[in-house]
Length: 212
Image 1 (cartoon, rainbow, N blue to C red):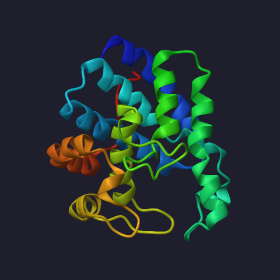
Image 2: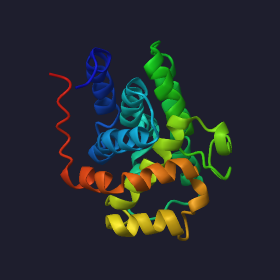
Image 3: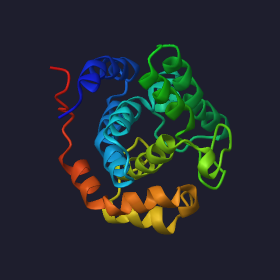
């Protein structure tokens, strides 16, 4: 049962996500799936109930900055060039700027996650090149769930892969993803909840039910 605080905040967060992704249902659905997947990882890490709920809001809103990315880049059917990659990367700062001024501590946390969910444990991420425990725990969790979901989902330039294939990429690496990108504790929690996360992905229908 969600707390009264989550019930009060969630409709506004969902409306904001819907507005930000009005032209891009796939990104809204991505954020919606991330809610429960991220919460499962957070729970496995021993987070308290309030932190889990705050993370759900951050998961839903982590990509709101993509509303500032031009459609020609957002929906490009092929790989992005170097300039386009930088424009896409700017969505993290844009998301932070959109959320930071709302004036509620849960949205402040979501703003930090929006800014830092592409940071990597080995320091190779963006926008600040943070490494290790310098990355806030919520951003570490979202980073793992985000890559998993991106691997599973169809995109304009690729087909999604299976759960087992995604797990192999994240634990063994490929040409773009390395295990060193992820905090070891978060990866251990992710592995411990991998079957739950697989089921969330298969069964998810975007009917979250907290907004009456």
